[in-house]
Length: 116
Image (cartoon, rainbow, N blue to C red; front, side):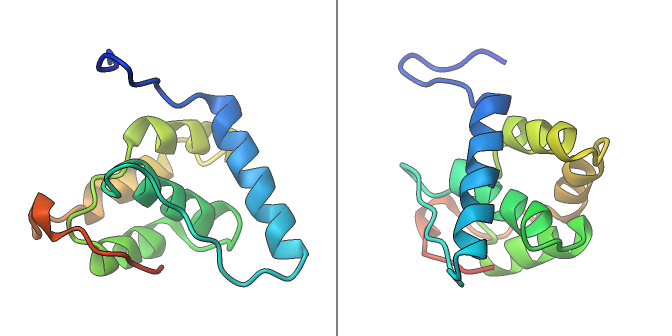
C-alpha cells in the first residue's frame, strides 16, 4: 500500500496513542469523544470502530454493524484496523468483522456526522 503524495500512512504507535487518549478520557468521566478527519469516510470511521471495540469493549461484529448502520458511506481505513487488531490481540477478527459488515449503500456525497 503506497500513500498518495502528501498522505502519511497510520502507524501502530498512532493507533496506540489514540487508544490511550480515549481510555484516559473515559476514565476521567467523558461520555463522548469527537473524532474527525479530512473527509469523514476512512480514518474517522476506523477510529470510531477501533475505540468502540477496544475502549468500550464492544464485540467486533456488533461494533462493525453499528458503524455501517450509522454511516453506510464509511470505508474504514483497514490499515488502522489491522494495527488495532495487532495491538489488542484480536488476530484479524476486527478486520474480518469490517469486511463482513461492509455495505455498498451510501454514496461519497452523503457524508454526515454519525454516532456509534
